[in-house]
Length: 154
Image (cartoon, rainbow, N blue to C red):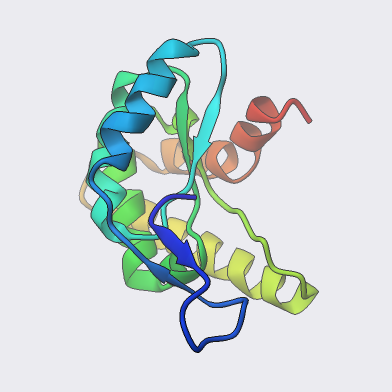
């Protein structure tokens, strides 16, 4: 999870803030290059990392981008991540959902939101003739299920 700082002064221990540290990108790229056989599943919390890590995932076969965490779990941010990722990456490198929620209702709501926003973005791509309906359905299945199963061997 990149772009997160925990232990915010005068806040609950569960709270965090988003923090953009541009040095994280070159530092992590060195690690990705050193371990080409290790699969890295990256999740960003700060939207300022979105384009940078999408480029990284495009350039490194062992880097995958997964879902949206806490402060990115909003329709506009999810859409922007998805649009960028689907335009730049093979969809085999994109994860559709992750949750660290410890309450089942949160997981359901977040999963429903992630599915709705993926459907929105795919419908828009179909409407604009970037993809056809069958491809959109294939992308949805792959992003929401198959990629995680392959990446985590489940």
